[in-house]
Length: 464
Image 1 (cartoon, one colour):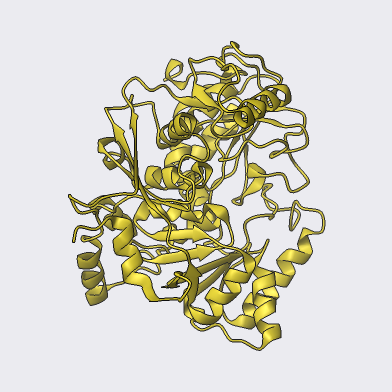
Image 2 (cartoon, rainbow, N blue to C red):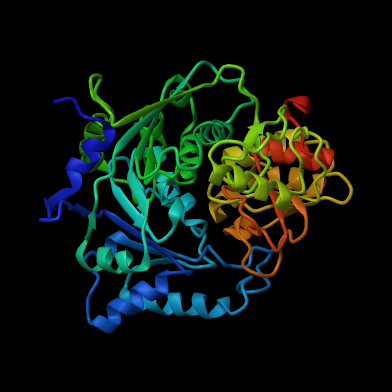
């Protein structure tokens, strides 16, 4: 019987079905971080339970670490030092692998898990973070969980899960070369809403997706959660297999040959059916930028702020967003003056993202009065960028070049964009997300860089 990619991944990991219809799913990898990892590890210890497969469990310091050059402080969150020290002690006590602040492999969890070969095609991976679906870009089945579920996954190597519906989103037409994975996923969310994929396992497909780089696929899947999806995924191809080859935790020798043979079967069969299907025409699509307080509040950079419409709840949400953002319907998005620009996060802080932004910034300067910050997604990305001289491009342009971490994807105290209008390569633009009163416009790294130079939201195609 023809099967979807999701069905193949689910069937390969379904251990049993419970009487109430849930599935018991085998978990191949568990990743923790310092915001929530302590609770799961301490709960296990208190209950006297061991980690079933400690070699499959990993922990990293990323969410609240100080990212200023040289990391002069342990954390940017008031009281956050306790989270870091407690997680460090718990991870060492539990005997799981820890990527601490001074480790060359440290970085944002969803950046380093594929970077190190911990996330691989066909594996299940869970983490107490909603953007765990990022690694679906490799063809993994990955989703965010709560602390109690993390405890269960560590102790048993399984989780009870309700099987989600399967959805496919097809991207048709040929997008403009300046239209990135970030623009594609923002356009989908804008067209079909932030609940368009609610509760579904979403497969992204089509010629435009086949043409994406591996890192672009991860950007796409990263924001599946902003689409309301349970997870997102893309069928792996030869470029993905080349990407994961030779990484620290990737299989080698005969195991690699066996894995590769299995991975090549990870694709949706031609006659397989989905519970739901959607389509996005990429032809003529402009680089996207959000105008409101949800990723669905997005238009092309050449568009205008829309009139509130739709069902009453949606309409009221748009009105609130307009008030918070200080905008009015009919206002052109391009040209809005900004006070800050941020390139970073698990969405867009990989080497290809930094290269794209540097291509815009090279030989240019950030506009007067704009606070501009770049935070590489991992220590390895930072080192690779510096080996190419990208840090000099950012610094010469007027960007702060920082250490890796989640940084200002969300406000945890310390530095922030409070009261400013900011353009950001992150995934969420909720009220106060980047500081009290911060007004965040989501965009691709290229659009962020172009806007930083112009001092206002700007189409990156004008600076290429």
